[in-house]
Length: 263
Image (cartoon, helix red, strand yellow):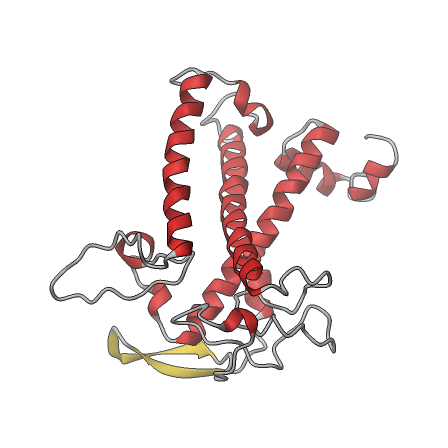
């Protein structure tokens, strides 16, 4: 569903065919998202492979005018900033990275909730509940798990912080004599480990399309996780069971049930 929504939102863009650099005889259709080199605010130094969207890009409210600091250079930029939180260019960079990371974690969380729930229904797991996962016994005691996770996450976040302060300073791309290491955008390390089939090194249009789809799916995942949490607190059931209940009786089992009596 998230992929369908993200793809349909971009279907209105004009397209063209371009040769694929890895196979000269193959031509792929790309989305033409603009060629303007003018950038305001966030657009300065944001990407080495993405070009900003044109001024007539789709906006969150049709007919509205985006603020000047949202110039279309960021993936998922639909001109939405009613409180002006991104008016400071430095803060805007941090906000963009924070949303990107939270979206990625949310996508992992949603998958980590739904897949085990389905696995339990198929008989691969027993008595699984994502809401009570912290109460289960694992291969180590909670204190050990916390210390190990703290150390590992601290190391990863430290490297991410260093990359934001000095882009490209923590690259883990193997250095080969016949291969030139390209400068990666902050938040998009790419390379052999994070982009093995090099989707993120196409022409500017498809890269922006892919990044826009990622951030839109991340936003949907963040909303989905909040919904999962609310449902667990309110109904005491898992998301799949709640979905089955809604399908069985959509007129009574829906969001409005939260404001009436619990079913």
